[in-house]
Image 1 (cartoon, rainbow, N blue to C red):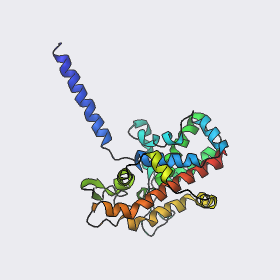
Image 2: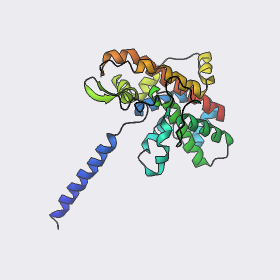
Image 3: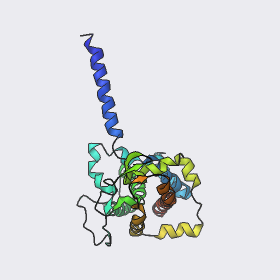
Image 4: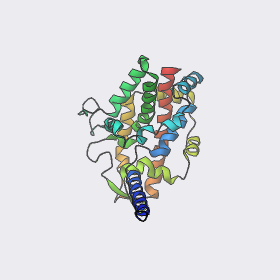
Length: 264
């Protein structure tokens, strides 16, 4: 029996390692960890003092930066599987959201509207309010990743296979994380490097509706899908990285606007 125990431990270790590899090989959510944290940091920089104080109380001291990835962290938890379709929406070319077929399980636009309405109601328990805020942080970010407003033909770029500097990838992953990772910047460095907006520019961004956010993502489709033979590298990066930066900044500013409106 003693000889068997090391073998069992070894098998258990291999099994655990296999599970870990299976987990980390799954496609990440929009923007990946770095992108979402950039959005959280930008949002924190645009919160007023009253909102910061209120959020600190509701979130038990957890920052928007750290809360931004919660929705991806629980995506493999059976308890939260009902949220799977909330990260995206399908709006075919030439259609508006109103004209598009709706997902019976919900979509990112419908969920953001509902979260905001329920948060404004002030009828939620503290635990539910905290969860709603975590969802809102993440989904506002997702809305600004162009491929989370899909045309309905390739699962938001996940089925468009490409190579990124010679390594197998897909178009969705390129926008989620490959381009951001190529900058070699931490989320803090990237957030600090983004443009500093004037007050009127912030106000203009925050006045736009979530349907405008979706339209902005759709307007980027033509450029996003200009992938040639699918071997992507410096050319694609240089053509698109400014739009990555722009969408991260817009998401953070607009998230702050929603939170200030509700708590400030």
